[in-house]
Image (cartoon, rainbow, N blue to C red):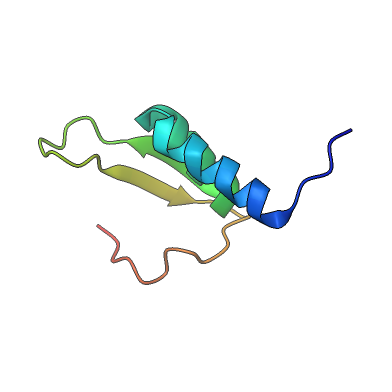
Length: 68
């Protein structure tokens, strides 16, 4: 067993998020915030866009984002 500090956990998660691909980020976003999240590969921009569909476990994290 490894005993980790909160800072070690946060640092490891931040490093992982910076290195993971768009599909993995979408999967994690859905799991963390309660919904289905998918990369919008049709968006033709430099920044990735994601489609998020809340489910019954939705945490309200994106309430300030307008629905399409």
